[in-house]
Amino acid sequence: MSDPAPTTWPLHCTVNGRPRTLVVSVRKLAVDVLREDFGLRGTHAGCEHGVCGACTVLLDDAPVRSCLLFAPQLEGCDVRTVEDLAGPGEVLHPLQESFSAHHGLQCGFCTPAMLLTALDLLRSNPTPTRDEVREALSANLCRCTGYQQIVDAVMDSSRGGEFDCT
Image (cartoon, rainbow, N blue to C red; front, side, top):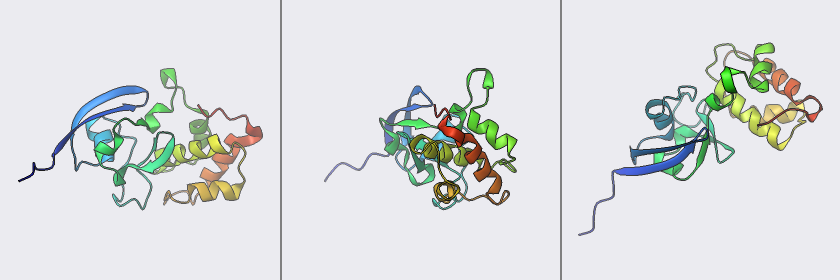
């Protein structure tokens, strides 16, 4: 008779630039590890089916739905959440400032995922068109803004390609 499959996993990853180690249930979702175990509440658990995009984080610099990943899938990866955007002394990232200036926040539930998705877009395309911004953000649902303010914020952040994506 073979050994049963493990029920826990020793997780080693980097979250917001800090090495993290934790023993996790193999069935625990990445979004739950980030929120419950690491206290990073900016990653929201919305639909838990990968549809709304509220749980989007950057995994090895690519946007992913953390509700669709089991915690062991973070092994050896670099995870970046919205908490990593603000600088020392909680100085807002330019993209966060733009969202605030353009009222792209509203209730704030989708905002962390929108920020990370927009950051990913601006890294690969510093001067996107409005249609490219809409396409990039299309997988993140927003019930409050109608997207116009969010698109305006991203467009304003991209002016002249001078946006600092770090």
